[in-house]
Length: 165
Image (tube, rainbow, N blue to C red):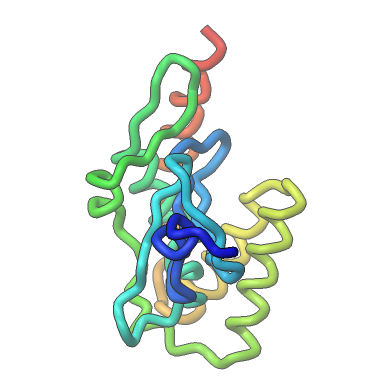
């Protein structure tokens, strides 16, 4: 028997979840299994024409992470909290400019997925994506990418330091 609650809370295929509370780095995940969102995640629905995988790629880079740290909130325990109002301030890459071939898209998604699932250092994914997407596809200057990473790391270290006082 199916309850009314199941149908009201089921997420659509074209959604992702941005975790509300994060430790080392913010996490945006695709909801491919129709999971139910709780208050620990911010549900995001993509507009028609937006490729959800490209949206993930557009988020996992040094620029978006710097904006997430900048606009997110942190408290005495060093946790990064991202509220709905702050999500709108986070700058991500324009997915329309990420005109990449399917094999590269699968490769980038695989790198992100493997690193996040296995608890590896997110810098590995950011190094790969910054090089492939920001520098390789969008022609950002490498120094600009390194500067954005330093901004993110500085803000992250400040936030995480609050948890040790």
